[in-house]
Length: 173
Image (cartoon, rainbow, N blue to C red; front, side, top):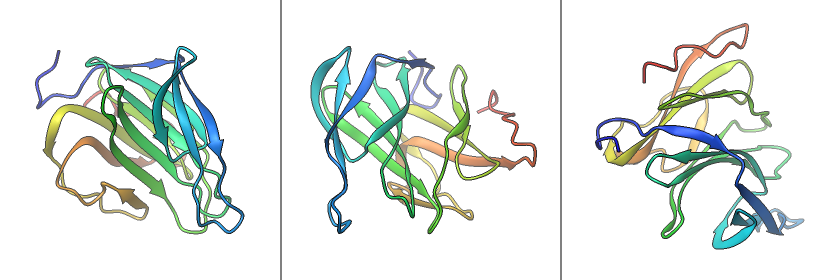
């Protein structure tokens, strides 16, 4: 297992799924919620998302989920770090006001994940075993959740705006 200063190894899995409890209310005041299922068994963990886009198993047994909600005007990519005993350990949302996103070009490497969501921007995401100091993201996209905490597990950065939309430079996290 890696030290707390290195990024955890990861691999994409299809053993996790979501089961919708309820969708977003018509007035938008109540967000959608879903149960997390592992191997078709309810874990009892409830997350504020509707659709699972990608599930990744980390070497320490935690899961990284990329999921979306159903707000058609400001669709958020929710990034959730899940511990099956503790529930949601950390949550960060990527959103751009009055824009929806489409997750694409997802690449899972040994110790990081790369993807595009709004256009051709490329994001790199890594997870550490223990919380470590990480400065808040600065850029043209908004981040919610734990975006302004200085100590966190999830480390996300925009690495390029390649006009071709190619994923590159993720192996050197």
